[in-house]
Image (cartoon, rainbow, N blue to C red; front, side, top):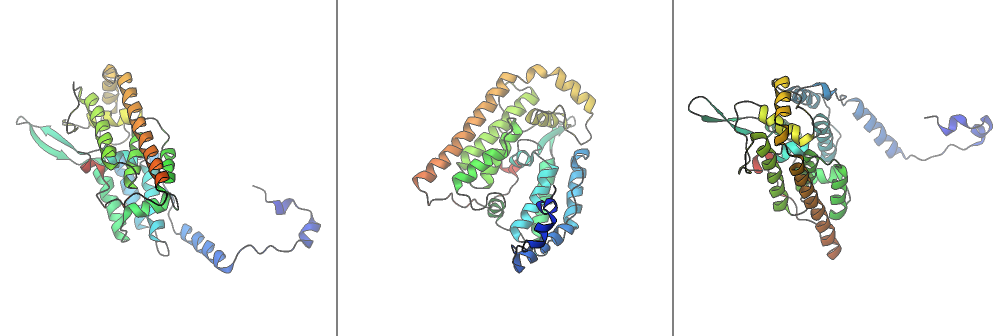
Length: 308
């Protein structure tokens, strides 16, 4: 963008007094920020990576970053922004809607064994990064990083605007964000997230009724990939060792099982829950302007474990 100073007449340049808009401290701070940015590695093209490659890249970025001179809030936000860039549906992973560990079965004895999913690997790497910088009170850091100075009602409205998508993954991100910030009825939030997961698992497993707990029982990743595809509205999940041709054929063959009316009904219900949660927060704030939601407990951020 061409500056105004470049287009001003030469006479104006000679007569205009230099504007003193910066204090020494503000200039120093800006220079420090620029120097800090220069020491922060650029993000790679995550869209061309598998989930495992994304996690490896995130680990490399973190280890190559100089966090000196940054506040805890700045450190947290930088780390979280990177994970959200790599996994746009990060909240859906955290909440357990997609990528959750499942009980898989194999062999003639139908023995069960847990299979570590993407959500767990994401959580492990995040915890490694947080711990390396001694970050604590993560809910507070998250609130200050993304909703600084906002009341509970303002923050709740900002959360709802941050994830405008209508698919299940976007709705799960909204609910998880409210949960992380300690906003709204936490029990209702978790209940709704579990219901969403159960509905997707019902379709993926062709079950006639909702499962409780909603876990997948399969010896391969196909059903988990179907859950991801239905949650995000994408045809297939990118990454992993799945036979994508076979998965697409299966999705096409079972298209009737993914009843769009039921899916729309589920989505409308979740939207009504989100609207109700936000309205209740705003209403409570109006009744008690000085009141704020209680500090959220430092429970594990990975909803995969808590969504059961």
